Structures are given as structure tokens and as C-alpha cells.
Image (cartoon, rainbow, N blue to C red; front, side, top):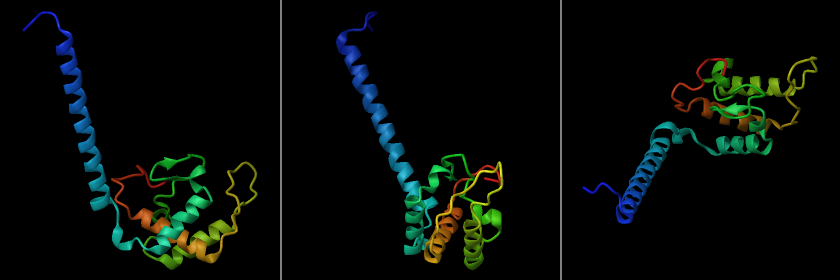
Length: 150
């Protein structure tokens, strides 16, 4: 082997290394997609109400204050496991009543506390949001959040 690297050798190392890492990136992207589709997404319970709840979540920009599965703002609590924390994960009617009561009580007006705005959601929107949060709580998030408090 030569002691000095020629332009041709440098070009081959550059192209070979670039191709190698592009293939690694593509392989990891495909693996991530397949994992999400086959393992972490519960498609059996993904219905129109869950999709409508996600639209409510997006329309009212809940992620501007809350985090869901670690994504979003940190002003308000994580809601990826809120139904488990409230103890209503397996009872959709109790989950609806709990979320409805919470949302209708906001803002509380307690001085010095962070306040959630009043969105004046309909019962149907609250039901859809409840179903979305139940569905989200059942996602295999690989032990996220790291504690029960979110």
C-alpha cells in the first residue's frame, strides 16, 4: 500500500463510506417502520372514535402544553398514561366521566397554579378524546414514561 493517499483512493473511501452509511440508515428506517406497524401500534382497537379524538387533540393544540409519550411541551402533565394514573383504563365510561369532570372544572382559579383553559368541548368530543387517550395508554411505549406520575 502506498504511503500517500491519492485522489482516487480518497474518492473511493468517500463514496464507499457514504454508501455504507446510507444503507445502514435505510435499514434502520425500515426496521423502525416495521416495529411501529407490527409491535407498538394496536390496530385492532384503532377505530373512528380514536381518530376523531386525535383530531380533537390536534385541533385544540393540546401538545402545546402537554406531552404524550414524551413528545410535546412540559408545561402540563404527561397524558400518555393518564388513564392508568386515574385508574380508569379498563372502564371507558368512568374514563369519560373523569375526563369530562376534569375538563369542565378548568380553569380552577387557584392562585399560583398552572391553569388549563376551558375549551367548551361537546360530550362527543370528550368521548373521542377519552378513547384516544385510552388507546394511547395501551401503546407499548417500552416503559415510557419512566414513572407513574408521567
